[in-house]
Length: 135
Image (cartoon, rainbow, N blue to C red; front, side):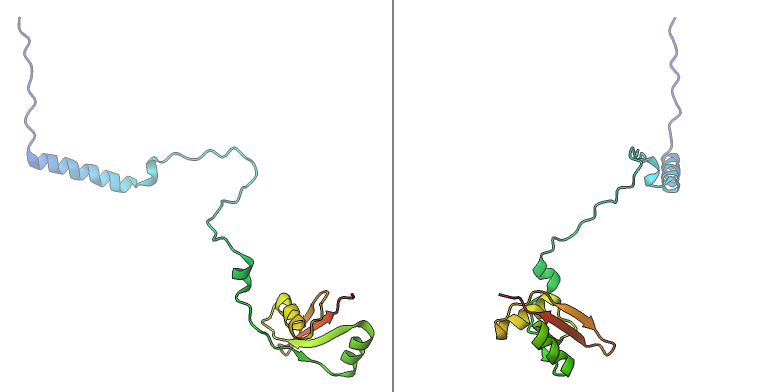
């Protein structure tokens, strides 16, 4: 006895195209991200993700060193501070940092500034109190 093998009916090219189109339609509706696996988070504390950051140096943060203008104050209180406490009272550029103000004091007078205390006034001027370092 011979077994008869059944042959499948030949598939028409139009039917193939319809099947392919239906398959693509399902894939589009399903979306690209549907088959991704979820990450399993083991830690109970939140870890902030690391983002790319350009390496910053102090020069990039502070910008190029500019020569900032300093104006000395001459009211009686400022003169008294200069005499009694060895403190310079100046009006500095509002955009100048404390380091820039300190360097601007040191350059012409060769006086070392211990610290720079700044105060921004309501008129937009920056007042700097600079106690001189004792040698």
